[in-house]
Image (cartoon, rainbow, N blue to C red; front, top):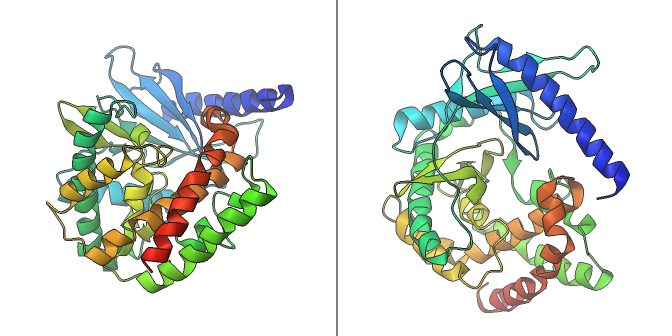
Length: 341
């Protein structure tokens, strides 16, 4: 990261930190709480500790312009319904003193209005991407959780269509309106790689058009079930961070669970474990199973776009190597598409 980029990053984080310190006064009994940065990515998340009681919470300061207040309200509504109607343990939003789940903060030095949400703190550790044996076991649980989410979305399809959330489809991932930027602008995209990857993008669109957006295939999804948004404790998997939840293909949740590890040799074992868990709750057709590589490939290109358009610790760590590691996956997918179309 260049000196100017580092300075800009620090300035952004400092603004979010000031917002967080203001926001905790909106909640009962937290005026003396400490606020420590946990993660800065799309938004900034903080560990909030209530000093007198040692209770912990997580505060998310939302980046202005990423989601509207109505969209954040939609997220809160979905999380609450999951808690009420499924067995999945999730981090719950907490209302402020005014009874609202979304608190707004505006600093004297900044014209922007920041939306903040406080969540319950869940104990556990993120799945370890380097522990293949445990990861296979955990992916069976992740598949089961995903099926519960999807069945819940199907059962409440009409009601959920009324809430405001982003749509994750071809146009907003790889097409003309990419929410995370264009994969063509990713790090290490050479002219040769641009040509190679474009072949994949051109194949994905007609495959998804044929696959369709039937209510049994496309609905409200988490859309980011990667290891950092999961917590494991006593062989139970809990789910946090629904910030990217929206309307998309249900199989995209599997692809998002493989975020940043799509090229690992043990991925086929993870997919089979996920399918085993999923089918404990909900059926999945052979046609749907055959389209899994398409969703993984679409997610991979989306992540290349994300890395190229963001400035944070994760994108700096992954850099161009992630794009370079995609070459083999692309060639495999092109061969796969010749056999299964």
